[in-house]
Length: 601
Ligand SMILES: [Zn+2]
Image: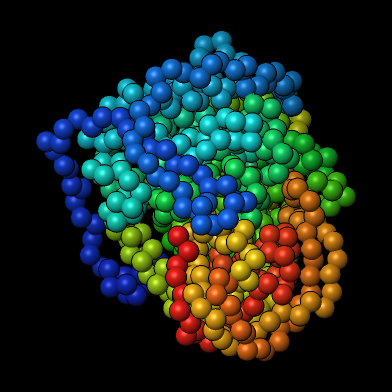
């Protein structure tokens, strides 16, 4: 069994020193540059038409980024308020006193005087359009990004804030300014996350964060799962958990976020959620959960080490300090299964399914932030929103301060991942490490701290359960256009073979199969259909590759994402999830091929 440490080695080398040595980037941050005398920008909107993943790649893989569509002046017809959150107080005044309201006011819909419901989907759409129309940031533009529709037809939308003259994705990626993506409410019953993103969007649109935009671009997608929000439920309309769908891309909601990250290649992603403070924790431990914020960055197999270090040193530590300065407490993200007999706590999962981990495999600093809110209705809502706003402001500030370093980090990591093709080992399956942890919780009557020693699966140290030689690439049968479309949506480079050729590689031989369910640290994943749990052997082979079949090279920056999708004996792989028909449609290519190929658009 191979072990490696995500966290422990960070104590040895300060990241700044390591990066400046490795990347020869010891120059200090340039003074902020102000571009004056620019004409006042006009609001713009960009329609990003999502590709239906079931269609063949020739017509579907290339999303259309057409310019500019005038923002709709008419507001969508008002729907019912999102939720009637008149939840009875889940605990008494002694506990509530631990969480006083912050001395801040918000101007988002849910904070209108006397309001008891959360912000509706119609109000979100209306607010985003108003910010495009009325936003007056000095020298910046506000652009509405249309990313398709939810399963029930609600627009999936984001706002882009930038000072770049050309807000088109390719131009922004070329500009060298890091783009930060802020995501709210992938889970519909976690309302503080979207309310905070709306407040941040207001601040950006009204110029209150303008100095930051001199160094970074910001995309805010306040409500990633509007169907869940309108029903106050975690999952999307089909019952699929969008935040376990970022590799498989079954839902239009996950496809929308994939399009966004493919187009703008954010270097930093903040994914805002809320966690259960009472519920099954009270049943299991007789306690309430106390931390204002839980935080975790990407922790999954094959994640580049420097992404981990940057996440820890440039982002998590400032986040903890930022919360502390505001009197807010924080801890590593943890959760527990829905099985009441299981008293183990686990850090967030290590599978390549969540936005946190998939964006990490896209070589972004990818942060999960959770506030204590699920099941609390409107209780402490201002404090929960404030906690997310402090986090987002800290992340924007850290990105601006590290803009040059992040740009160098991205270039370095992209190149490093690409250069590993055909070399060494790749981890096929990893697991968290069982340990113990002293965790502070709350007495449900007195509200006093209670420290419990708990069984704790640490994702800071991953165990490699299964490894294989890292191939040069993967061959896919011409029948696998559906898989190719999804890989392209993720941004993975795919080549189509022009004429019959040969490749040296390995085929998979299936040795066992059973039907199962995808599972994570919470238990079974809300999903559509089960998965094939396969066992395979690899067998050396000379492959005849016909014209029209595909090659997925691993000398590309998203190689680790391709491995996560294509190795067949993992629960999130495309074979296990029947996106690829069988292991016979797939092979590992172990020597760089000499075959004529054309990139799939
Ligand atoms: Zn969540």
